[in-house]
Length: 433
Image 1 (tube, one colour):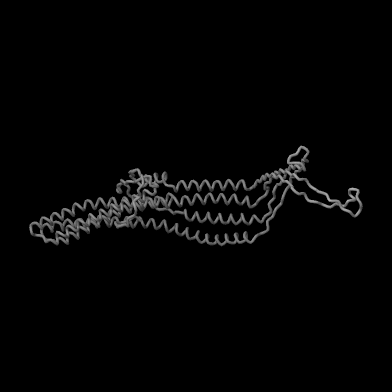
Image 2 (cartoon, helix red, strand yellow):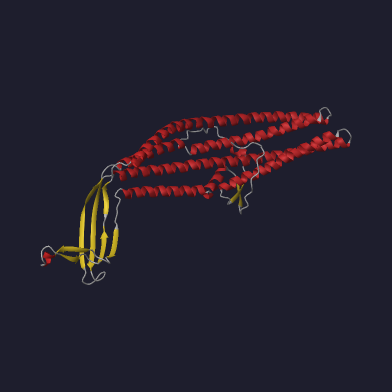
């Protein structure tokens, strides 16, 4: 809701190099926010990450692996073995010490593999596709919230500027009243207390103007944050030129509900991914090897070169683990929670549409009433001023009617701005439905 005429706590002014730019509509402000705000860059990055995850899931269906390894081993001390001496023509029952093996061993191995049937990998594709939709929906939710915040700040500025204009006009009236009382005091007709009250009235209006200026600076700094402090905004919109279109009606905004539904779908699919990991995986496997053996040195001219290869199929099956079973059960509980949230967000979407309609009806009714009150207060003030000048009415009654009129004018200005604020709430709601 936009701020009425109130005193806000001061916040530090951001001392950064900013270009001043004048905007004449909320739509123009929003167009610049979309160019400057980092939210949109972050949203683009999140979309790219989700797209990369989806493409990765496509490749993981085959899960190609091509490990390549090379080893060079120097057996500095080979194993000593005892072999029956009779194998070498020696006496029976005796043994001969023999060194077996090659000191220098070089092995180059290449083992291409890929999955032929991988149910878990196939299920992961759908999970990644749902994740893309979740990211897109969340980006829209964040953009919707940002737009509504810009709407609030923008109309705070418009409201304060309109109130300041009214206060400046009323300051002239307050000074006129003070001048009349001063003349009467100089003539000896009015008391010093009356002159004091007239002076207090002027000071009070000046104080309100000062507070409005502070509030305006605060709201402009807040709006500048939406531009990442690259622009210091000035707003120049005539609220009357942007009045509410009564044909515009709020529609049901299903962003939050859609997000919960997508999260439920993702959890269900993620559970399938875990469950399908229990299914056997059929893979193609192969190995291509080259080995060089020598007792002289690595890659010696007289080394023995051996090549051996194989191709085949491999069926692998992982037994259930406590960790995986726990993860599946946990996701089932999360699904129950999300089902409750689905019902809640659906009801909230219905309520929000009705609430926006009632907010406009309330704002429209308040503004109409404030208009009537302002006319009546103006008539009362004019008559009281005439009676005061005719020495029929006391000053305190005149000042009371003056302040009543001022409050009525401020309320009318606030009410008019509140109507356009509510209009844009509905437009934004319908845009991101």
